[in-house]
Amino acid sequence: MSPPPDTRPSGRTALLGTGPFGRRVAALLADACDGMYTPPDAHPEHAFEGADTVVAALWRTAPALCERLDTLAYETGVRWLPVVLEPGQVRVGPLVVPGTGPCHNCFETRRLQHDPQPAAAAALGAAYDRDPDCGPAGYLPQQARTAAGLAAGLLRAPDTEAGTVLRLPAGSRAVRRDTVTRRHGCPRCSPDRPQRDLGAVMRRVIKEAAGVR
View 1 (cartoon, rainbow, N blue to C red):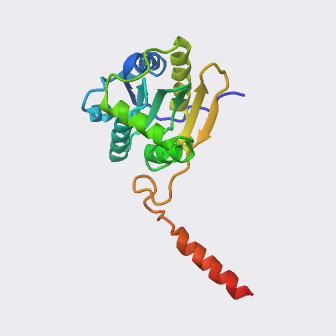
View 2 (cartoon, helix red, strand yellow):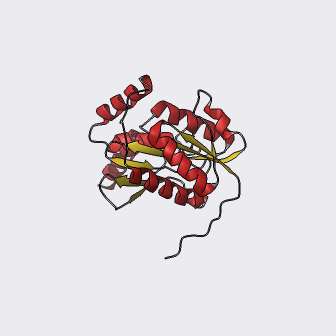
View 3 (spheres, rainbow, N blue to C red):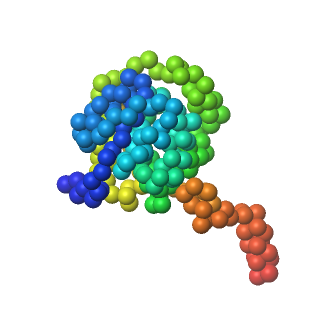
């Protein structure tokens, strides 16, 4: 099957890379998509200036940085893509396209909902945010190459791929593909879809069912 045509408009891709893994992925993507490397300093908003897309290649989960990047994406209308070396896997995504799909905050919320140990996951993320040196000491070369290849594919994808997440478990060749669903009433990506009051809905259903008898 031939890949879908590149429907993305031409524009600058800004590349952020943290840690050895992130910098290697950023370097590979710079060659693959003619991207421009931007140092991930204390002012990540510089990456969004004049960019069509921002890629953040990270050597570990970084909740605070990702939240900042997500906020900037919605403030500027620039789409962004995280590439993260996580425990036991490489994650590429979600592809965040402001105005089209779910935000990164919705992804994090959904992930904690399905995590069998959400408290431990949250504690690990908080520890990484506190300590800039805490994290995995190394990575496999094929992890960086595969991550860059998967990211390059998503960068060429149309905006309808917003919310796509690709995962490659360590020691596996099978890529898992998932799609994030927006949260109802999310103030960032779904403000026109108010949060439903489940209790009110259930009370109405029970009342209507009682009236049928």
